[in-house]
Length: 434
Image (cartoon, rainbow, N blue to C red):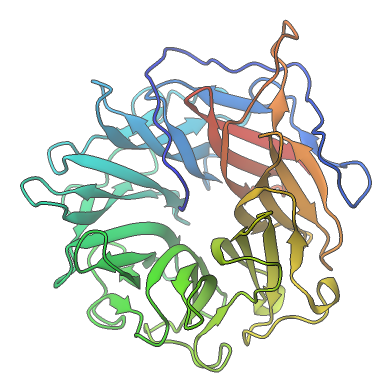
């Protein structure tokens, strides 16, 4: 997951409460919002747990148990190093103490890394979880390895995955391996997206890895389990990854283009790890410029019906803003969406994550001018949005609080929405009734 990493002090207990939702001052193109925070989840629709502090980068409902699992980072018992963390909530937003150790799985890798940088995780179809990140290797100046932890359904490390539940990835010929995005293929193989650098701080090469279900690199994928993007794609990084029903892998990020600018880029790779030349004729597509921006960065990629590809990108310009672009399965912009143009929202905002709900509507998380995080929802044809502010009042109706960070939105099995983030320096989740 792309974005900044929040640090958190250790606190005790659940520190979130809400009685009513504050409507954002942002204006929307559509009528008043028809969706709302779920008052039966946590306090007013938001639940948090201070166990290990931290921030959630990913969220999903666990198959078979109905637990809401939030994946991201926390602090170790000394509060001096980040840990990979998964926290379980019940369907009503209480901490599920039957999961792992009193509701939270905390994977302390201080024996492997001087410092650790968690990036999120993925819920697998089996109910198992993988947590991802990268760490600074001891006694190796500015060398970073990727790391993945595999958890059983109950939250304990899975001994059948890697070495006692842990897989580290070091890329030959490169000092730096950064892993950001992850996804599962229907056959149970795990796809990772990120970058490698020959030396720390050097130009990154976009990279995709594929692991077997037991954590070994898949020898049938690209070059021994690793696909490094060729020079024609450009230098940069991949932060998000999604799986098409056809088996195609879609990854998005920020890649340096021949015009001298970093551009939001979507890359398509076949199931055996080759660039898919049926996608925009050469396997990748760059977001079109047109709003005075000097660079852009993809913040999420999602697959819609008929293999359509949706990409949300933040723009760097005098006014910033974001775009949502819909591509056909062949990588060409869909002319039936928003009159054939990317959606463009131009107040100074930041966009995070994208998801397609069960009705085909497009969801993205947006930080507005007032600093409030808002869930935007666009219709299938790109019209809208309506919006819901992720802000709440405590029971005494004093100063309103909010999700300080909103990093991921996902769709539950019942069609409702779950949001991962942080509030008051603790990992927090929101539930939205559509």
